[in-house]
Amino acid sequence: MSNIYQTHKPTESGGGLYLKVADGDTVKVRFASEPAIYDNEYEGKLTTRYAWVVWNVELKVAQVFAQSGTFYKNLANIASDPDYGDPTGYDIKIKREGEMLETKYHLTPGRENYELGAEALAKVKEIDLLETLSKSPGASKISWLSEWDVDQTPKEIGKPDVVIEDISDEPISLEDIPF
Image: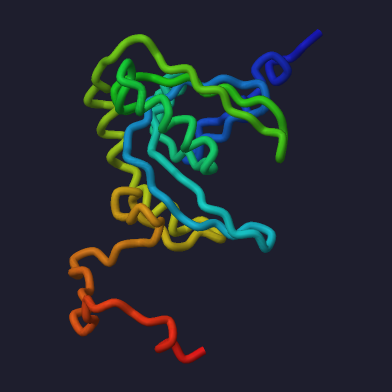
């Protein structure tokens, strides 16, 4: 005979602040912010990570979803497809398969474009993504992706680019180089 705790097990994908997708689970979300980018140091290894505020469609909660560069590239491929575009306009099902280094995420975009309701948008705006990430152990160099140059170095917001004016346009002779 089963009891209520066996019948109603909590999902590992949970309703906490961070969305965690368990092996074999599928979660339907709406990406509700632009991506943040940051460095993450874990067990002596430094990796680049991306994070978004997402609306968890099933649980009806706003959450932070942090992922690798591979996940970001997969999402960017969908967003670059003219049939879909910006992922803030439609739901995406995320299915996780595997564990540790063998983990793969499969993304399936929804068919309908619709606006999130006022209640969902209010809950999404309650999460300050950059501040939340700054409290994560190992996270550094946190900023919005739009604030990064294409060579992946953070821009200094509000400061003009440095222009070096004392270099002539005359050809350089390799014999003039002192090595």
